[in-house]
Length: 168
Image 1 (cartoon, helix red, strand yellow):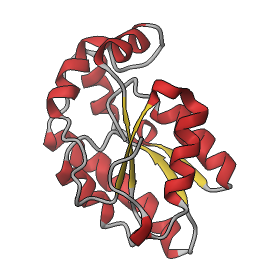
Image 2: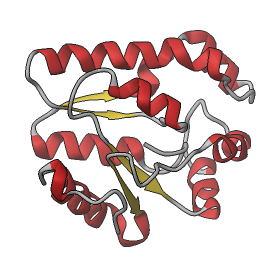
Image 3: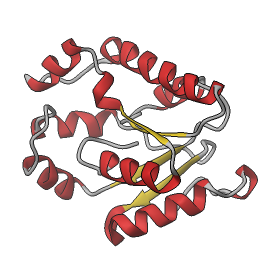
């Protein structure tokens, strides 16, 4: 989880590949109206996000019901969204990719994506970092993708009682 440009897709795809788990790019289930709105530089509001979150919960629920594990790249910016996503089933947890503003802006300017850099500040304003009481790992990308992946794999493979809510 994290704002646009934080590396969610890169990290999640590689994590799913290494673990042999299913992968969903959350952006792929945005309703077309959401994509059009963001492409036009208009931030999404809660009413825009609920159908998108429903689609992600449905996808996750299907896998969990079959006893499968999965990785989803999804912003999950607010706690209420993360709480909703947890309804997919037991074991849903979050790795929060924290990246400094200037680096996020640089990444967003250098890629071809429907989310324009002009929406970065609105995403950061919406972001509620995971609290200590959430099953979430905070990872900074200052050490690169490999270190980020290692930290997430180590944390995700520990029993819940042994995981810390805040990471490296």
